[in-house]
Amino acid sequence: MAEHLNQKVEPELSPFNKMGKPLSEQARSIAYEHCKQMGLSSARAWSCVQGVAEQLEKDRPYEAQAAGMKYLDLTGTYRLFAVLLAN
Image (cartoon, rainbow, N blue to C red; front, top):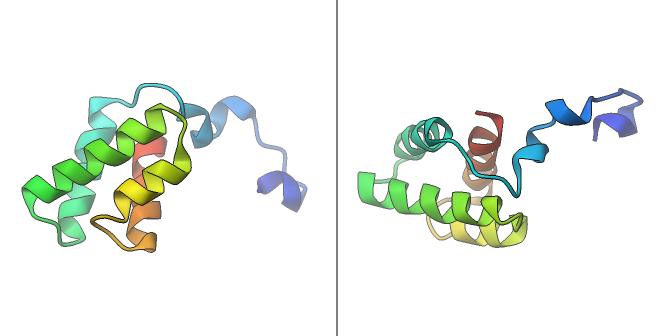
């Protein structure tokens, strides 16, 4: 996206580079807290994070979106993606 705006982005700095790789426990923990802030119970928040993270680790963004939308709306799901990929 930044390239479209004539901005150069170093590939190694892009959070999207984390797709297809293991996500840290810290990222999962922060994502869990975000899910709870968005109104999910503890059990549902953890299920949501695990489902989304599993698909992102397999580089399957559409499946990750579907997993997140079992519990959250589209905006919440994208917020969860951002937290998991940026931490």
